[in-house]
Length: 145
Image (tube, one colour):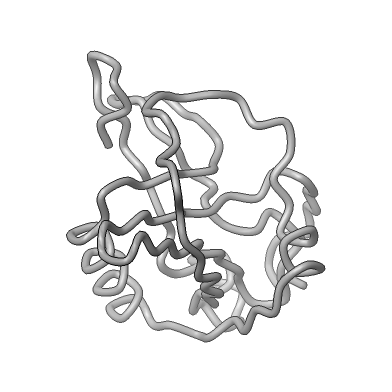
Protein backbone atom coordinates (compact mmCIF):
# COMPACT_ATOMS: atom_id res chain seq x y z
CA UNK A 1 0.00 0.00 0.00
CA UNK A 2 1.39 3.41 -0.97
CA UNK A 3 0.76 5.85 1.88
CA UNK A 4 3.01 8.60 0.55
CA UNK A 5 6.11 7.53 2.49
CA UNK A 6 9.31 6.27 0.85
CA UNK A 7 8.50 2.65 1.81
CA UNK A 8 5.23 0.91 0.99
CA UNK A 9 3.21 -0.63 3.82
CA UNK A 10 2.17 -4.28 3.70
CA UNK A 11 -1.45 -4.93 4.69
CA UNK A 12 -1.79 -8.44 6.13
CA UNK A 13 -5.36 -9.78 6.33
CA UNK A 14 -6.09 -13.18 7.89
CA UNK A 15 -8.49 -15.09 5.67
CA UNK A 16 -8.81 -18.00 8.14
CA UNK A 17 -8.11 -18.54 11.84
CA UNK A 18 -5.37 -21.11 12.37
CA UNK A 19 -5.93 -20.91 16.12
CA UNK A 20 -9.59 -21.84 15.76
CA UNK A 21 -8.74 -24.63 13.31
CA UNK A 22 -6.09 -26.13 15.60
CA UNK A 23 -8.51 -25.99 18.56
CA UNK A 24 -11.21 -27.81 16.56
CA UNK A 25 -13.42 -24.78 15.86
CA UNK A 26 -14.65 -23.23 12.61
CA UNK A 27 -11.64 -21.56 10.99
CA UNK A 28 -13.62 -19.53 8.47
CA UNK A 29 -13.78 -15.77 8.72
CA UNK A 30 -17.11 -13.94 8.89
CA UNK A 31 -17.38 -10.73 6.93
CA UNK A 32 -19.78 -7.83 7.35
CA UNK A 33 -19.96 -5.17 4.64
CA UNK A 34 -21.28 -1.68 5.29
CA UNK A 35 -21.94 0.27 2.10
CA UNK A 36 -21.76 4.04 1.82
CA UNK A 37 -20.70 6.95 -0.38
CA UNK A 38 -17.93 9.53 -0.25
CA UNK A 39 -17.70 13.24 -1.04
CA UNK A 40 -14.00 13.73 -0.29
CA UNK A 41 -11.25 11.14 -0.16
CA UNK A 42 -9.23 10.97 3.05
CA UNK A 43 -5.64 12.18 2.65
CA UNK A 44 -2.85 9.70 2.01
CA UNK A 45 -0.70 8.96 5.01
CA UNK A 46 -0.80 7.27 8.39
CA UNK A 47 -2.17 8.41 11.70
CA UNK A 48 -2.86 6.96 15.11
CA UNK A 49 -6.49 6.09 15.73
CA UNK A 50 -7.46 6.37 19.40
CA UNK A 51 -10.32 3.88 19.14
CA UNK A 52 -11.96 1.73 16.48
CA UNK A 53 -14.69 -0.53 17.81
CA UNK A 54 -17.11 -2.76 15.89
CA UNK A 55 -19.63 -2.42 18.73
CA UNK A 56 -20.12 1.28 17.89
CA UNK A 57 -20.60 0.54 14.18
CA UNK A 58 -22.99 -2.34 14.88
CA UNK A 59 -25.03 -0.20 17.29
CA UNK A 60 -25.69 2.37 14.57
CA UNK A 61 -25.94 0.12 11.48
CA UNK A 62 -27.54 -3.11 10.34
CA UNK A 63 -24.83 -5.61 9.48
CA UNK A 64 -24.97 -9.29 8.59
CA UNK A 65 -21.76 -11.30 8.95
CA UNK A 66 -21.43 -14.05 6.34
CA UNK A 67 -19.01 -16.99 6.56
CA UNK A 68 -16.38 -17.08 3.82
CA UNK A 69 -13.89 -19.80 3.05
CA UNK A 70 -10.28 -18.82 2.39
CA UNK A 71 -10.47 -18.80 -1.43
CA UNK A 72 -13.72 -16.82 -1.50
CA UNK A 73 -12.27 -14.22 0.87
CA UNK A 74 -9.03 -13.93 -1.10
CA UNK A 75 -10.97 -13.50 -4.37
CA UNK A 76 -13.25 -10.89 -2.74
CA UNK A 77 -10.28 -8.89 -1.45
CA UNK A 78 -8.36 -9.05 -4.74
CA UNK A 79 -11.39 -7.95 -6.76
CA UNK A 80 -12.04 -5.00 -4.48
CA UNK A 81 -8.39 -3.94 -4.41
CA UNK A 82 -8.29 -4.02 -8.22
CA UNK A 83 -11.18 -1.58 -8.61
CA UNK A 84 -10.68 0.67 -5.57
CA UNK A 85 -9.34 4.15 -5.98
CA UNK A 86 -8.24 4.26 -2.34
CA UNK A 87 -8.02 1.85 0.56
CA UNK A 88 -8.29 2.94 4.19
CA UNK A 89 -7.03 0.45 6.78
CA UNK A 90 -7.37 0.11 10.55
CA UNK A 91 -4.98 -2.33 12.19
CA UNK A 92 -1.96 -2.79 14.43
CA UNK A 93 1.43 -1.73 13.06
CA UNK A 94 4.33 -4.17 12.92
CA UNK A 95 7.81 -4.27 11.48
CA UNK A 96 9.68 -7.36 10.39
CA UNK A 97 11.20 -7.37 6.91
CA UNK A 98 8.56 -4.80 5.93
CA UNK A 99 6.49 -2.12 7.61
CA UNK A 100 2.94 -3.30 7.82
CA UNK A 101 -0.46 -3.47 9.43
CA UNK A 102 -2.05 -6.63 10.78
CA UNK A 103 -4.82 -7.54 13.26
CA UNK A 104 -7.33 -6.37 10.65
CA UNK A 105 -10.29 -8.03 12.34
CA UNK A 106 -12.29 -7.94 15.57
CA UNK A 107 -10.03 -8.22 18.61
CA UNK A 108 -12.74 -9.59 20.91
CA UNK A 109 -12.32 -13.01 22.49
CA UNK A 110 -13.07 -15.90 20.13
CA UNK A 111 -13.60 -19.65 20.46
CA UNK A 112 -9.81 -20.23 20.60
CA UNK A 113 -8.49 -16.89 21.91
CA UNK A 114 -9.43 -15.83 25.43
CA UNK A 115 -7.85 -12.35 25.29
CA UNK A 116 -10.68 -9.82 24.92
CA UNK A 117 -9.49 -6.50 23.51
CA UNK A 118 -11.97 -3.67 22.92
CA UNK A 119 -11.51 -0.49 20.93
CA UNK A 120 -8.65 -1.90 18.82
CA UNK A 121 -10.54 -3.63 16.00
CA UNK A 122 -9.24 -3.54 12.45
CA UNK A 123 -11.04 -3.09 9.14
CA UNK A 124 -10.71 -2.22 5.47
CA UNK A 125 -12.60 0.56 3.71
CA UNK A 126 -12.61 0.62 -0.08
CA UNK A 127 -13.34 3.84 -1.97
CA UNK A 128 -14.57 3.36 -5.54
CA UNK A 129 -14.69 5.94 -8.30
CA UNK A 130 -17.93 4.54 -9.73
CA UNK A 131 -20.83 6.41 -8.10
CA UNK A 132 -18.41 7.41 -5.30
CA UNK A 133 -19.33 4.28 -3.37
CA UNK A 134 -17.55 2.83 -0.35
CA UNK A 135 -17.49 -0.54 1.34
CA UNK A 136 -16.33 -0.97 4.92
CA UNK A 137 -15.35 -4.60 5.53
CA UNK A 138 -15.42 -5.90 9.10
CA UNK A 139 -14.02 -9.33 9.97
CA UNK A 140 -14.87 -11.71 12.82
CA UNK A 141 -13.87 -15.24 13.77
CA UNK A 142 -15.77 -18.07 15.48
CA UNK A 143 -17.21 -16.98 18.82
CA UNK A 144 -16.64 -13.25 18.44
CA UNK A 145 -19.70 -11.16 19.33
